[in-house]
Length: 590
Image (cartoon, rainbow, N blue to C red):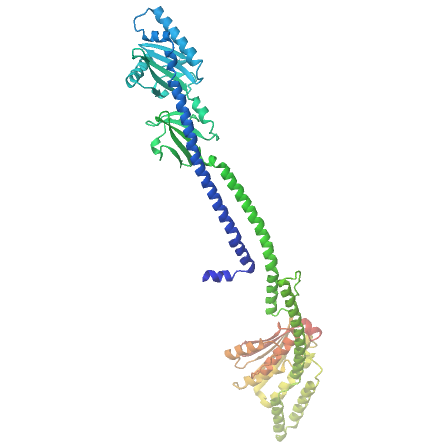
């Protein structure tokens, strides 16, 4: 459920990219992975089958070469003279012995070393405590005693033997690797043992045989003795002397081990194993190269398609996003900053944008019409506010005049009637919205003077303003409601009240303060009043503080929402009016 909610909250472009990834990138990646895995597995199986077949062929060829060397003594039997020399066990003179050795060595050199395989390093014949030898390279070791031991073994077994260089002390010049093949010699006429013939065979022939399928330079061919694991041939000529064949899982076939492909098959009459090793990284280099190229092409395809899809998604989502931003601006009533959206396409989004532009234009027309109506209403309300005089004030003033007449106070009656006449004349001049500050203060002083006739010593006041501010234009009837409230609410709880009217000006503001020493504002009433004073201009208050709300409304109508009325409690009630000083100093209007 949470996952679905997160998907729903994604933007349109994010949803499009997510859909593209789910429907394109992931399936293509999985398909490429499965194809590559199947291809690699098929290649491994093919190579795993092919390598044992090649090793089997190589093993058979090696066995044939060894068998050819084992059959070489047949050439010796073809010479009656050589057979007679080997039969002769009598004592001869030194000259005869040297002559026979010369004949035998010359014969084996001509018939074996120079007319046979070029891989023969040397031929040795041990017969009746005599050693005949011929070699293509200088050699050392392989004493008569050592040859006699192997000769006796061959005489008893009636078979051939293959020795490694480690099994004897025989060593040739440049230390080539070789196999020493021992074959017993039998007198075919009387079936007696004539001696043993040893052939030193250079293992280079194994390299030639296996070279036909050794395509990689990192491939290694080994001929290893099964029992001891001794290495008889190593195509890389490493210093390793033996390999533990017991660690191999099979004796014939191929397998993967230690990041290498290993093929093994029996060779040389099942006493040796022919081993093929190659690192899998080299063996599957082409597959890895193919994989790398495929990955690069896949990434390029993804990059290209992603850029293309992002471009398409951007062209789809961006107009909708611009439309959404404009709609939020309209929602916040910022119609003046909202411009018609450009229509560049005639698709569904383009037609939606056209409808939106038409709607905005129609809303603007309606707002302008309603705004003009509201302005007229505000002007009418402002006119009504300017001309209103509290009926209670007139009634109370007439009552005061009546009491003064009855008391015979003619001078006071004349003063009250004079000041009331000035107030009425001030109120009847309805075409004037602003007056000099000195006139507004004079109107307030007339009002206070009339109230003082009524309350006598219970009311005192003081006005304080700089003479330079006397000519400043201020809204008409802006101070009387504040002074009237101070008298009304101050004398409800106090015996007497003093009112201070102070005018101050700064570089940007004209501050008009009306302060009394009455009980001040009740916190709850003050909070309610501040809420009313912050209301939109033109909304009339229905509370008992109608005059205070009207003053705040008039200021906002004239100068804007940054100016108005503020309330404080400072040893009584304090009401401050904030007006823009440059505007009032020039015209009295904003």
